[in-house]
Picture 1 (cartoon, rainbow, N blue to C red):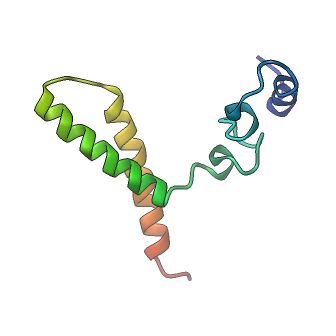
Picture 2 (picture 1 turned 180 degrees about the vertical axis):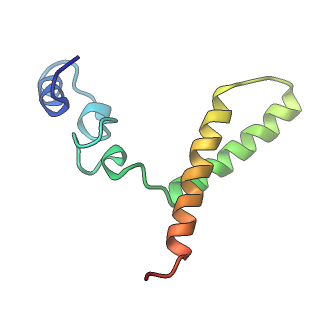
Length: 94
């Protein structure tokens, strides 16, 4: 749109568009410094928990005979993030 994300967020947050996701958990990096997007979606416990939930979902899906495409993408995202975090925390500093 060509609008600075911080400016857009400041406008939205003083209007009826204000919400938790625009004020606290903004998905645009750099708008809210404490939001995961500003931290590169660094994983850790959150990714491990999400992988556990995805595993339970896969088990239920297999036993209930229904299909879903979105979980495949979610699983890949969180497996990759978990592995990056695992490797980073297990690798000795140089």
